[in-house]
Length: 366
Ligand code: FNR
Image (cartoon, rainbow, N blue to C red; front, side, top):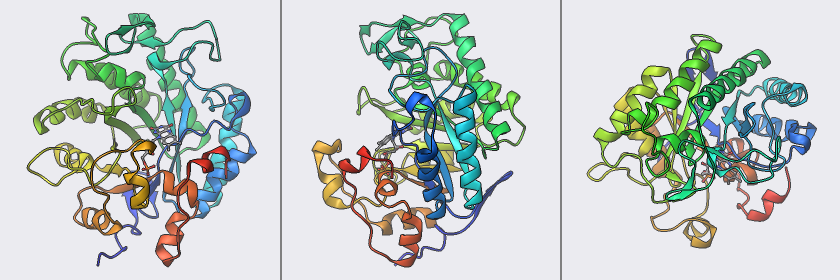
């Protein structure tokens, strides 16, 4: 038997003092009409803080750039009304004893035609590719790159001024920052393209700009992934050496915690070791790491390929605790199980039954 003690033990990083190791994973919900988080959104996050989540990472929220948004009714992180909405979210979460960071997002090349704020603006990508081999959007100029970096910095400063406990930079899943990381979409021949290390340059400049616009100890989380929405099998790093080379410049630029996105936390990252992506990241950088992927979901659900998963053996909570207790990673992010159970941490602690996750639950913001 694995004890829950570590999962419910505090975690401290600079000014960030978390009551436990449970993080709410960022999840786009599209319940912000006019791109403004309203009182329903306030209640939604407050419920998770009351339910015992140590750190909430909000749904992806768009930075102030004309091509940042790709979806309807997602919240913006700029403009007086959206920021006022976020202020209410922060205050409610803090009043409930929780901590919260916004996930700062730019969709890049996958922006759909006709999207707000300017329907005439196409997707922006490092090489104008929307998928490997498919040229269809705007290839970013050096001036575009500087504009996006400045928008990230502004959003981070606003987050700090609003009282957020840090920021998460969305560098995962095939969105803009990941489009620079990924050779499949980055064919640039200037200093923002080249080998894997050269392709981190855009992110490195964003992280440095975010640091400069905030404070020396303002927590910066970087979320990254091997997998892309455009291709679940894509990989940035095939070996630990490549992963180390990729992470070093990002770590040096000022990332405080890496959020290592995998679809299943129990999958080993490289042959010959049981470590998962978060485990390798922590080992290679010496920085704290967050793991994520199918925590708290039942086996039948994870096994169902139609729901977007395939292969692999679901692991029990025991496996998660074994990894956490052996310091493979520091924090555990929970996504869908927290949609079905806003009080997932309290239920777990008290041994109560959990509601099963169901896609229907996404139709409401509860
Ligand atoms: C997501 N995920 C996600 N990830 C991210 O970085 N930004 C986002 O805005 C979203 N949006 C989103 C919406 C919905 C409805 C789901 C289910 C997922 C991915 C999410 O953060 C997480 O990594 C995965 O869901 C895997 O964790 P779970 O759900 O298996 O615990």
